[in-house]
Image 1: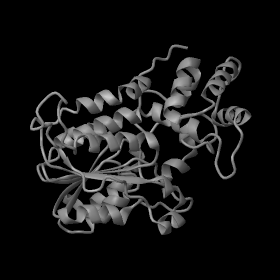
Image 2 (image 1 turned 90 degrees about the vertical axis):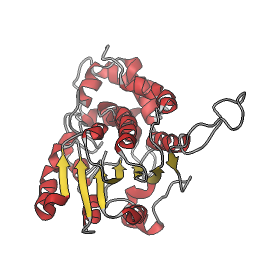
Image 3 (image 1 turned 180 degrees about the vertical axis):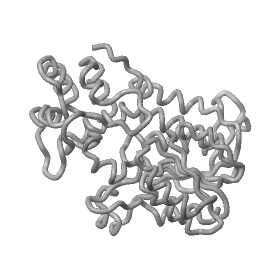
Length: 330
């Protein structure tokens, strides 16, 4: 879950738009929850009164972080942590918290990680600090549970025949990346300009890295450590992520009656100020320079009140977290 990619060069998506959102808050500490190649951090650090605390579960980005630590000394700190552990960060002057939920160019191009259907060999997909790899999922997960992962995390129309064929083939063969691609392509019609494997690989990445739980817990913990007036900015790249972020901000930025049977004066507190209800999307020029940015959506909100329990938020996405916790029961 880091910055988006370009086939030749890394670009932090919607960078100018993000800077315009946080610029009125300059002069304090910003948390870059998905450091990646450091695009957002580098830009924010150009303002001398800004500090960055960067997090990333991927230890391979430490070399980039070290360069910034040398250049900016006390103004930059890096922690090899999942962003769900953001509540471990203690700083009273946090002005903004940034999440970019894509993948970096370096991560995609590292074919040993198996994040891409262009990878060779073993299915891995681990981003770091994982409990298991994709190889274990394909090897051990029951057909029924594979079906659920593909259907709910990939919105895959052919989830049933693909999961069935995986289970059948693995009886006599170790399934590696290209084997999985061949299984998918033998069942799905290939569409022009788009790989037929995209949805299945997305679903497996989400499951292996527990991206749903990470995002839900990361958002809640970000709210808990952010002082009033601070901003949370999130860039998403697929519909599940955006659905979660949209609900998180919208649910707690609108004043509603607790019950239709109660007087209209009885209101639920408002915890966020949502200046824009619709997401910010990349311009035509940005998409032309960096085509993968076309699916990006940026949402943001300012914290205006403490004490939210997020019960409705957690309840609304319990079904997705339950799928992430499926057992290896093959």
